[in-house]
Image 1 (cartoon, one colour):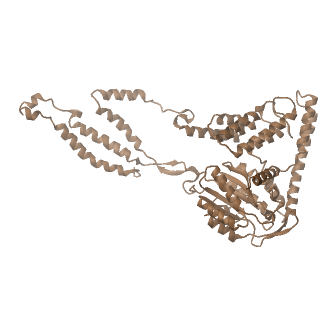
Image 2: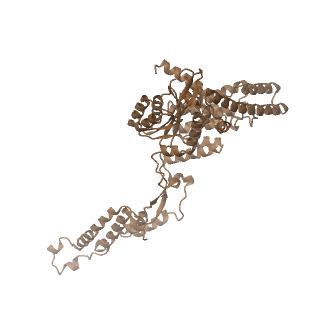
Length: 575
C-alpha cells in the first residue's frame, strides 16, 4: 500500500463538504414541523411518533459513507502498474530514387545503383510501421509503388530499377531534377489522405527548383530529407549515346535542400547509421523510448473496486423492505462464474472486430491459407478489405471473383492504383488460360506440374506467376539482387558498359538455370502424361510451355512500358 496514490486527487476536495452535509441532515431530521406552535409541549410526545432509522439521524450516518466512497472512486485510487499498448503512428514515407545515368558511376563500388538498391532494401526491411511508397526520377518523376503498409511488396521492384527504364534515358544528358519528384511525392501523400509525412531523396545534387519545391513541401507539412549518393571526387560514366560524363556528389546543395524541407542530410554509409540519422527507420510520431515493442507501464485506475460497497449500501436508502429484494435480485442476476466472450467479440467495438478480422486474414494469407484469408476479408466494408479479398481469390485461381473484388475496391476508393494494376494482371492471366483448351478450370501451364483441376486448388508455373502478380504487384523477387551484388563485389565498373555486362551475366546465369529446370520438367511430362489428358491436349500444353519459355526475362520491361505510356499521356495533357 506504500504505492497508493490518486490519479485525480482534485476530487478529494469534495470531502470537505461532507461534515456540513451531515450536520444539515441531522438538523433536518430533528425538525418536527409546525406542531410545537399549535400543541402544548406536554402533549407532543403523545401525539407525534418518534423519528428513527433512516428518517432520523441515521440518514446522515448512511449518506456520508456513500458519498465518501463515491468521491474516493472518482479520485482514481491506484497502487499497481500494467502494460499499456504503445500507440504507433502510420506516418508515411515516400522514397524517391535518382535513376539518371549518373547512377552508373563507380565512385561507390560496384556502382551507385547497386549501393542504392542495397540501401533501399535495408531500409524497407528495418523500417518499423508506417506506409512506404517508391518513385524514381530523372527529368520527370514516375511512381513505382504507391503508399502501402507492406514494405516487402515495395522491395519486389528493386531489381527492376535501372536508368534504362526511364523514358528519357536515351535523350537527356542534363543532370537529374528532383523538383518533379518532390511534387509527385506530395501528390502521393495527399491522395492517400496524409497531411504530414516524410520524403527521402536519394541523389547526388539538388538544383534551385528542387530547393524551392522542398520549401513548399515543408510549408504543406511534409518533411524533405536527402541521402547523398557518390563522393566529392566523383567518377566518369558513359552515356548510351557514347558521351563520357562526370558525376560528383554536391553535398552543399543537398544540405540546403534538407534545411529548406525541415529534414536532414546524410551521405550514404555502409551501415544503417545514415538511416538512423535521418530518422526514417522509425516514424517520427513514435517515441522509441516509451516502452518499446511491449508498450509502456501506466498506473491502473482501481476505483472500480469501490463500486461494490456502493452497490451494497445504496439499496438501504430506498423504502422499507427493498434492501432484501435488491440483494436477492443481484444474487440471482449476477453470474457465479466469470463470463467468457467467444473470440473476444462481446468486448470489442465494431471497428475493433473489423480490425481483428483484417489481422486474421493477413496471418492466414502469409501462412498460404488463401481460402481462410478470403473468408476473413469477405464482407468487410472498406476498400482495403476488398482489395485484399481480390488478392486471396487470385491466389486460388478464382480470377473472375478476384476481378469482382477489385471492382468493389475501386467503387469504394476510385483511383486505387494497386487495385487497378492487380486487376490488369488478373485479366492477363485469364487471357493466358484461353489457348489451353476448352476446360472451365484454369490450365496448369508453366515450368512445373499442376496440382489440381479446380480454381480453388492453386495453380503452379505460369498461372501462379500471374496470380502472384495480382497478389503482390508487378515485381517478381528480390532474391536476384543479393546475387547480383555478390557477383559484382570484386569489380569496380567505371562506366555503363561494365554495369550492363555484370547485369547481363547474372541474367544469363538465371535464365540458363530456368531453362535447365524447364527442360527437366518437359522431359518428365513427356514420360508421364497427366491422367485423363488426350494427345491433342498434351500437345497444346507443351506448346504453351515452350511459348512461355521463349518470353525474355526482363524484370524492368513492364515498368519501362508503363513509364513510356505515362509520359505520352503527360505530353498530350501538356504537363
